[in-house]
Image (cartoon, rainbow, N blue to C red):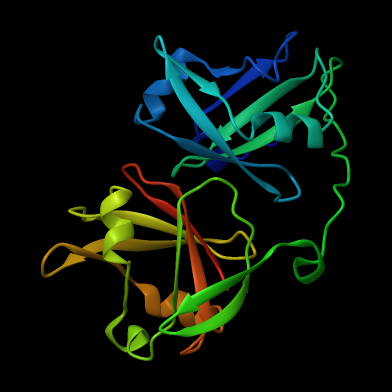
Length: 236
């Protein structure tokens, strides 16, 4: 194991895979002190920086991996006897290392990639009477759509549709927030409230500029987690 103090400081746990692990896998109770306890979704990342979103259920004091966990297992060809190391990076993000029963790190199977244009569902997004096409395939998370306005970068804030904010616990909050771009890079921003408790994203200007977004571009926001630190993925 590399002697890297920054890695050693990060909380981590390991779990051997037992029969039934695809449907019965939980985070150790002792490790839960590093989490808030009200998590709804977690993000898992492998060595190739692939990203999987996993729903969490809370039952009898345990945090069970649910929707998304089976897909992670299948795409990494996990077997009984393997064991996994979960390194917690904060903001509900875990890096996962996979070892075989001989304690050798497993080679991660190559997962076929599909062209976004050819393989993803094309959604017709209506905004202000016009229809634009955004490459986006709903995955069961709440989402909303809008288009980039020319004043957003100037004021440094991006309004979240009021109804969407109210329905998904984003109103009346002032807190940290994470945006995830299409390359799976995380961007720290701030969830704020304008007059009348209308939610908006502070720090939007840097995200918009770095990703080459311009006025009129259609975008979709997918809410991965609405907890203490909300996480939204952005498509355009």
